[in-house]
Length: 138
Image (cartoon, rainbow, N blue to C red; front, side):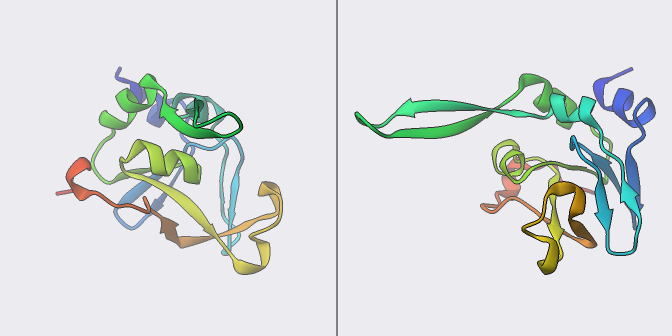
């Protein structure tokens, strides 16, 4: 069984939205405005994590960049068509695959994760979107 199927079958932390299967890649659950919940998937969150790497700029300043875990790339490359993975905004910027991060309601944006309420039909995508690096959906 490939990596993606392991997480789709064994850890079925998913929701369906139209033709998309949304997999939780978060260590915490998401609550949506309609009351539904996407359960946490800490095992997958560990697979798609990014690691901070500091680069010294000068005597006092560092530039922190994030590097993907090699397992993340393998997992994301093995996903079935029309499958999206929910990750952090940092993971979204670094990995450049079919990842999304939740958009929270304005009144809950600054609350701790367990108190946030998310939109079910509104998701963040990579800020600097380069479609040439993404596998297209057919």
